[in-house]
Length: 327
Image (cartoon, rainbow, N blue to C red; front, side, top):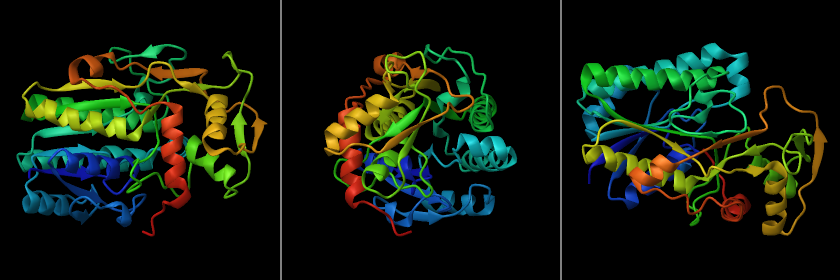
């Protein structure tokens, strides 16, 4: 089977992508430094430990496995941290990605699927974002991802590196079969934090502001099931294999859910109330951030069929009760 190098394949989204790639007939080769990933999550193909900025190690892995494509997830992704320590994000995300792209081109591996972010669009409140929306990132995380997109375009012009870029907001849920799931230390995402509060693993959840101009006063965000997301990435790889050329796709539902809706659905799924308190608004939080996906639907045939709150929370709750990694 053709091999695909999956950077960050020991992480949350990357591990699900590896499972989807194997199901689609590829052999995923995980490349991860285990800074935030887990060795236990690598279940669907070979594992190669290494850092993206270690060019010698990258060259070894490309020579050994001769992948037909790269699927790039590895990145630091905490917005707050990126603002307090931007250098770390530019060194890791941009420097590491440049090293990876150069290694891929040197190995004549010129199909590249990149996991970007809607954070590249910046503070565009209460509109449905699409691929033509202007990119004005307001934090170092979003800026680093936009810079990587620029790198890919430049390397296409100079070296014919074909790429597909995916931009999206919040990822949720877990593998319905429970083989992999979401497990961060520390945890920062709403749904696992909420499930931790329900199960008593942490203190009550804080809702940051309940006076926004939304039906229930809480912020609205777009959520995509992790399995829907990685299915799109596999479709992006097949898009490149068919010779259709470089393309950018947004992935979202176009509507989103409020924080209170997430809590209400959680109670319905788990039969337990979510302990929570109301705190002040956080600086920089927008009222509503959602992404359209009409291009992905029309051109890739992608449909976020699992991206309902009930499905995402049900799958996350199933994993949450039994799933963890030991390292």
